[in-house]
Structures are given as C-alpha cells and as structure tokens.
Amino acid sequence: MKFADFINVASIKSDIGTFEKSSVIRELVVSLSQSGALAADQVEGIVAAIMKREDLGSTGIGRGVAVPHTKHASVERLVGTVGISVEGVDFNSLDGDKVHLLFLLVSPPDRPGDHLRALENISRQLRDETFCRFLKQARTAQDIQQLLEEADNNQFVS
Amino acid sequence: MGSRPLPGLPITNFPIPTGYFYSLPLSSTHSRSVIVVNPQGFHARPAHLFVKLAATFTCQVEIVKGNEVINGKSILDLLTLGAGNGTTLTLRASGPDSESAVEALAKLIEQGFGEMPAPEGQT
Image 1: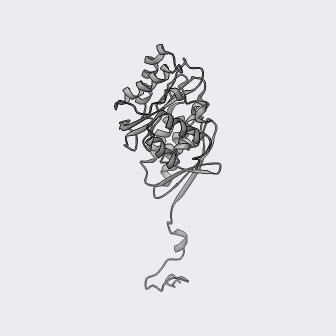
Image 2: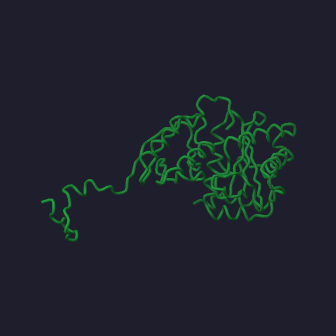
Image 3: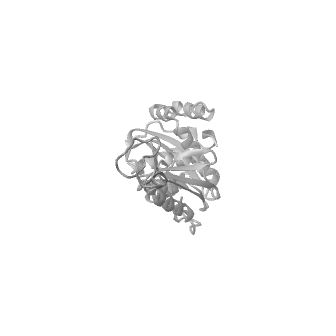
C-alpha cells in the first residue's frame, strides 16, 4: 500500500494551529470533512471515537510520530491525512517525546487488513531518518504532498 | 587433574573444576515461535502493549519474520512487520532475563492482546 492509496492530499495540514491533543485531532478530522473525504455530520462522532481509542493507549509510535485512528461505519474505504505541528503535541507517547508528525486514519470496520497495511507503509517509510526529518521540516502542504509522492516512488526506502 | 591448567589459558594457581567451559554462563539467548491469533493482527495497540512489556526486561528483544529482524522494543519497528492474523513470528531475546521475557511476550501474543472476545471493539 502507498500513501496515495489512503492519504487525502487536499486535507493535509502543514501547521496545526493548536497544541492540545483533542483539538489537534479535531482539526484534522474537520479538514478531512471539508475536503469531502468524511461526511460533515460525522465529525463529532469520529473525533469522539478517535479520542476513545487514545484512552486505550497512546497511538504515539516514537520518533515524534503519532497515528490517531478509528474504525467508523460512515467510510467505505480507508481515508487518512497528515498534520505537522511545529511546536509539538503532548501525546503521552511511550518514549515521552512530543509529537510533530500525525497520520490520522479512519477505516471501515470490516477492513482490518487495509488498516494494518497503512500502518506498515507509514512505519516503513518513517524508519528512514531522512524522510522523517524532511517531513517534520516541511512547511507547506505542497512540500508534504511532494515528499509522500517521493516516498511512494521508493526514493527513501531503506 | 582438577588443578591442571587448561590449554591456551594462563597458568593459574587455583583449581579449575573439570567441565568448567561447559557450565560457563555465556550470553543467554532464548527464542520461541508464536502465531498472531487476534483477528486484527499486530496493529498499533498490540505494538504498544508489546513494547511496554518488553521494556520491563533488561534483555534485548528481537522479532524475526521471514528474513526480517526488528527491534522488539520499538513500536515503529513492530508496525513495519504488518503482521496480520495467522502470521508466524519468532521472538528472540538475549540477556540475563531473556527466558522470562520470551515467556511473557509469547503469552501476550498467544492470548491475543486481550482482543479475542471483542468483535465490535474500537481498535
């Protein structure tokens, strides 16, 4: 699976304007809804479901990266977006580091395989330090989009 | 014969018991194969639980899948395996508490990370 298969590029946020976990998640979900990837009347339910999932254990996966996510019956295919926080968000990650890079995913309840493959793709690409650093340094949505495309073309694969 | 110096070693004045080399506790390594049994596979929450448990042991923990070897104390590394339901993994640990680490971590996987009876839960 490639980034292009699940990242909705129109909703990418290069500078999340808020530092609190739940507001950051809300901002990304709203962005997905504004670009048409999620229904506007589902935003509240999806934010609540993602926060409920965070209560089970942080989705911070180390290296300043988090993958907040949920299953939701309102989507027919896996959709996701990317957000970057220059200041960093406190995500209660196991390594204690603040999160600068977020991949938010919403998947249909009956497709656990797609969700797993998206996580696999994200983590494989981010294991490359250059890609991870470039992404955190990106300051426009276009830069992020271009980096994801380059990763899809195996330009960073380790 | 117990006090005879062993070949290749400096001559010592104290007796070295027969079988010295065989009982020497060198680096202790343990490994075990496990199958991922929970329906959702090794997604973010199981990876979090695994790393949290692995961190309570001092030994090094590795997971082998096919010809890939990853650090069992890194969530990011664990997620690169994309280990779905039914995947066979080998847990490998080396260090003083490696035996109990392998036992505890294998048990966590074999019990399905507590996700077994939850058909409608959030992931």
